[in-house]
Length: 174
Ligand code: ZN
Image: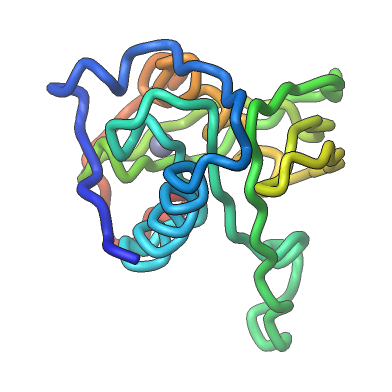
């Protein structure tokens, strides 16, 4: 499972609308997913979309412990959960939106304030091609919105109210 190169906006694939996956049995798809998981972990990041590794397919991986941001620092961190979402769609959004500081593996060195829905429902297919539904809130909801944007060629800097050079104290998804 090789680690793939994460591309930056100078590669036009990052700005393209990605194609839906049609053949879930394709070994190349399974290899892509395995590589994306390994690439995300090595970065390290909490999410990665296929266009970020120059593959224009509607696939994203997310690994995050839901609710971990609400715990006191002394608390035992919950185990992270791995999500593989294929052809995802956001089917419900909370009216409430919240601002948070985001980063992106494809835009190294920068962070920005982005307004996102506090909660979303994501319908997608898993790597076996079975339909899944995920109700996410807080940072997990933010990560899904960020990754699904990538599948439409949208980057957080397009939505950010403010972008600045990352400081060591800045934290956020990816
Ligand atoms: Zn990103």
